[in-house]
Image (cartoon, rainbow, N blue to C red; front, side, top):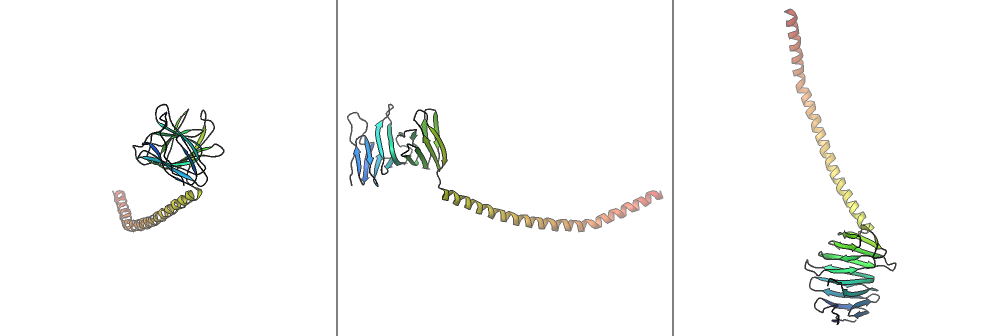
Amino acid sequence: MRTAALLLLPCALLTAQDLRVRSVKGQADVQPDAITTGRNSQADIEIGPAAAFRLQGNSQIRIGRRDDGRYRIELLRGALTYDVLSAGAPSVEIATPSVGAWPTIPGQYEISVSRAVESAIVARAGSIEVVAPAGSEWVNEGQKMIARGSAAAPQFKIVSALSVWRRLAILVSNLNLGAGTGSSDDSSSSDSSSNSSSAASSTAHSSAPVAQSSASAASTGSHSGHGK
């Protein structure tokens, strides 16, 4: 196991107070401006008290600052899991070969770059903004963005981040809820129909003498009229 802390560079790319390596498991090469992890390894990095990320195995990042002074973590390959603990977290860009992701809202985000240089941004909790030259797009909780192509003109799509089995379980649960509601509605409809039938029958019976009386009255009136 190797544990190391990021050093202060002469060009002030990093500061020990803002960004430091908390722990390393397995084999990892930790440099002041880059970290590379080996197979079955990981490195946990803190960014102040309100954010942190875990670099997974077989991954490589470069760490620097943008022209505006904000951190830029370039994910060259592999994957990292980024946790924003509170709204006061530093504004950090996670740059992939295709797009830049900005995890600023409290939540958990998984960002990866495959061997085919395809980027994936998953919002496990919260919402993350993904930026490209043409504009920005939000990836919300339960969604996944897949991006490919150059950073100048990337192509991307947003899909569900839920597994097939998870989506199936939700569908079955919704169907069961719908079936239960339908049975209740059917029962209510049946009871309502029965009550309506009874009421109609009762009304028919009670109105029969009235109809007969009206008929008798009409008959009487008719006869009286003719008599006149």
